[in-house]
Length: 158
Image (cartoon, rainbow, N blue to C red):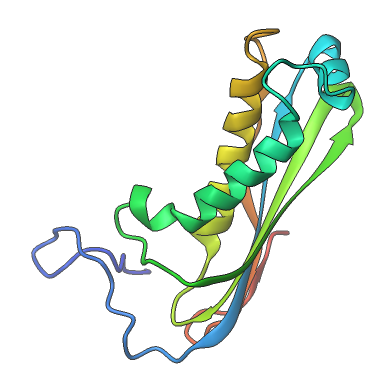
């Protein structure tokens, strides 16, 4: 059975010591989505919302969130991120797919940064569009893949 690493011998929370781990290039790719109605979709693609360009603001929010993950997730390390990219793809039924890719060279992975970026991007889009429709649905958020590190293998979602 796998042991949880964020607990000390007393069973209390701790931040894992990664000082002895080698620096390697690490990446993570995460997914989220938001389902909107036709009116919101049209307003987004034609940039007709009073709050501005929804997708641009969503991208910036995702980037900022990745950079600040360590401030909001208690056991995350502050990581010098080397690259962050948030991208979009519209699917049928007005579903906006969000993909966040994060990269670093360091001693710990960036899965939480990618997941946070995708999540906050979806939340920001909701916030920017809620005046038009509050029934939007944020979809599943999950890790697509992670690379790098020595201790744990690369991961690709099946």
